[in-house]
Image 1 (tube, rainbow, N blue to C red):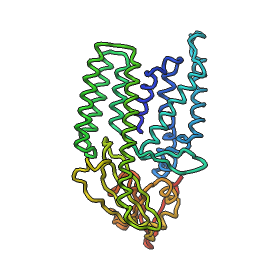
Image 2 (image 1 turned 120 degrees about the vertical axis):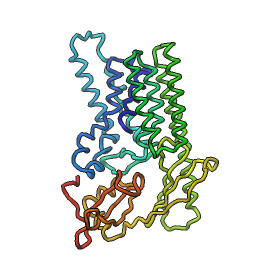
Image 3 (image 1 turned 30 degrees about the vertical axis):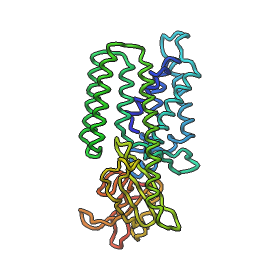
Image 4 (image 1 turned 90 degrees about the vertical axis):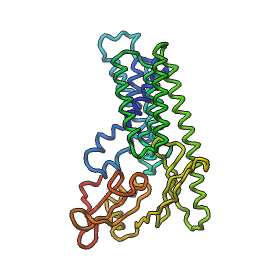
Length: 374
């Protein structure tokens, strides 16, 4: 997930009651909810291959979870002891503070594991990715549930209301004007936003401690996650049955990938050694509508240029990170030809995310800059 969502989750957990367990609990939760993404400090600035290799590596593993939680807890204890004018009674309680740091970081790993990017929980012993496939990296429904919970559970004030109104307007522009969000989902999300604003306006007349609102928002996230899980299971079963009539020696890989803001429709993928079939599929036949037949993409991973690329240092990263790779040979705008490998999770044409292109030399071999490799 992106860090707005992680931050909202940290605040919601704090205001649900955990902030009352010890001083610095809110800090432990909010920073902890973002801490695994510290790997962006060394994965984002060298090359895209380094990013694919390093991001969501050890900091998103079980080992990293333990190391970061303990490290953050120790830092908080040092900060607490060094704060000036702190009475002994106001000092943080070590065990509740450790619990808060652990829950904050755990919320990050759970949310990341639930999306289609995935995590590597057993790193460094295993590079295998685990994908929940329940929601995309940017999920506007989570913004709505968690944002409403944090707003309702916080103190009032005109400045705060203005900041939140600007945030809601920004989120609305992103969702309502994004072409990748289905029209029906835009309407449903807009209705949810209006409902949240009405609830917030009504709650402002009856202020309370806010913990009930925070717990309600977290409860909605759990219900939404359960809905996505049930819907995903049904869609995955439908995708699998679409290929059941084909007799194969090696069973294809089947997936139902989430679509933006749409928990009832999924991107079905059936991948074998030679081709990728993909298309939108509903969790239930009742909501299929006018579903188009699945399209087919040749994988061409046995093309000589693709084979050479996949055996290079760049290819090691591609094979590690790309979940559904397929290759094409294309004309380069500056002349010559390029071999392009895309991950069908994210990009099927053009040069979007999870795409690697290498110019071919006169012998048809890909030219890979080794300084870009991890």
